[in-house]
Image (cartoon, rainbow, N blue to C red; front, top):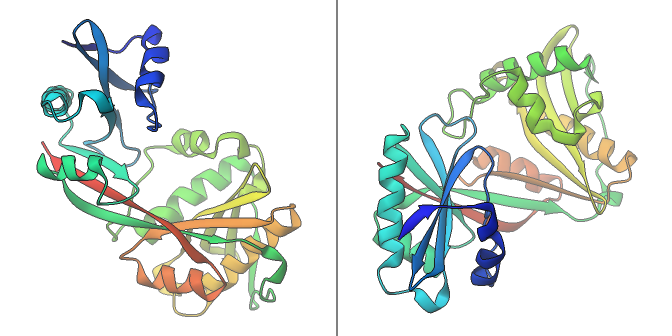
Length: 280
């Protein structure tokens, strides 16, 4: 039997998952469990992918003792029907490798590799290259409301033509994603040529002296002048001044200019995340 997931299912699902770490109860999505012989044996959930209309992020598992009995396919067929009824046109699932049992199962069920995300890390900010923002360019912050609006305009202009573009619906979505860095105007830094903003970088301070840079962009008309490198170094120096020791960043594997830029200042690849998709 397949039914909607209930809050009181959480303890049993955590025991069943063992080495899995799924988001057992999703916010803003739907989750279901599958039962066999009176007990829970699996779970699946979908939630709308931010910035990708029609795409639902998929997560779930079948307990190891109940795998290879057709339960995964049965649950996936059910989820596909539910997703179509909710208006989704594609399922997306992120996995750390393509040779895992989960990836092989999804491949057999009609999923294909949609894109690969490279994750990079710069483990020691003490040896950063020197910082130089070429005049007349400057880096500045804006009042919060103005910063959010300016960010959205630049983000759309920088990434709109590219496959990795994931637009924000409104200012409130930007504010929500900023999370507990919201209220800190230094979280959004803007590269300006006089009064004209030509680039941006979003920096976050995370626990354990870790910083995250994402996204970073330069308007197409201003690219090819070393401004992306200057803005990236500014963000790294900014994080170091805030006590950050390690920085991380991510990009699609197809974005070769970004990969080259990040590696040129010392970032090294730490992992990949593979996004498998199925059209509904």
